[in-house]
Image (cartoon, rainbow, N blue to C red; front, top):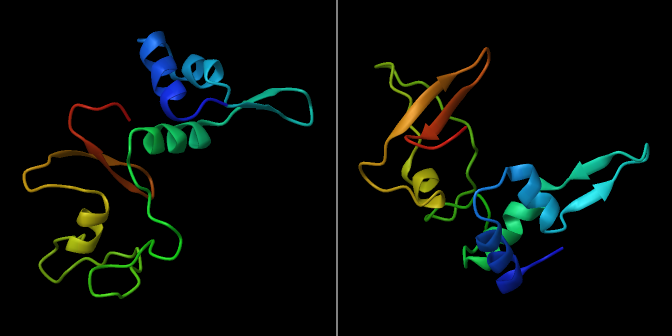
Length: 119
């Protein structure tokens, strides 16, 4: 599995290929018990973020807001019908004022997808 500068170079070299081909070419592949190929997308993207200098929160600080309280990851609809996410969550995701999202409604979920990006 490629990491660091080698991973960034390979991603740049491959250019516009499918996500599956990209993960496979960078070595993030394992074999299931039945012999089928398994692409490790999570490990690939974590390594890619780390190579780009994005510091993922360690377990000791993950989910802790500025005041030191542990985030509950539960949102409640307010009396006026608004759904408030909260500053600690937006800071954790490095969201800025004016960022726009498309709202995708599922049967039992709501997804916020940055405008102009793929799902």
